[in-house]
Length: 256
Image 1: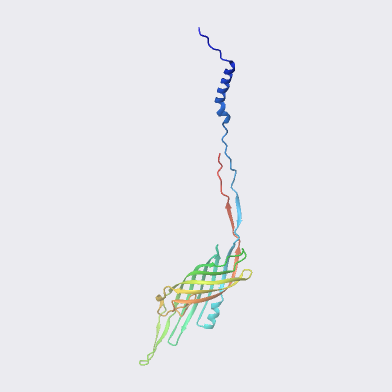
Image 2: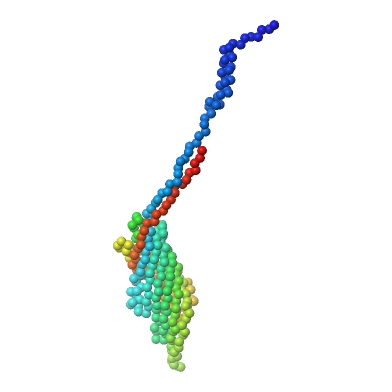
């Protein structure tokens, strides 16, 4: 009978330890899966717009003086502009006036009110929130409603004699024009400015009132011309305030 060889207890112990190491090794090396938690929360930050806000109201000084010396016309213009940002100003201008044609053979009067809307773009970069001096260019769209009185006329005829007549009062009619402008404005004292504006004006519908056209259209100029140049001198006062802007820090979602 064959004998079964004895296996040393030493080798059995080594075998058991090796098997145990193979079973428990993955558990030993496994690490808990952790991720960082972002605890950033919403934070409201108050910011002050250092550019500020400004609303200017100005009166034209040039035309009343010129109209006084001309005598056959009168009128007044005002201008309002509002600073938005990046050196842009929204502009509204308006006024009213009248003119009187008094020739030896023709007499009539016209009155009108006008409105202009557009923008100015300053060519100067502001040095700080208190710097409001500007040198600018801009565009305007403009319109006016004109009324004409009854007109008295005399037809001169050396053969048959002069013939007087009357043309009935006309219906109100519109004048529409565009403007290219440039100018500057300087703050002489706190909130008080003086400046000038030069304008190139281009009538868009001059043919619609070619008969008995206004001698002068306040806000435009000579009514029988399709293109004119004009000039304004403004005394302006400004209203200023700071605008607070509230912003939020970007949110980050908490993850696990």
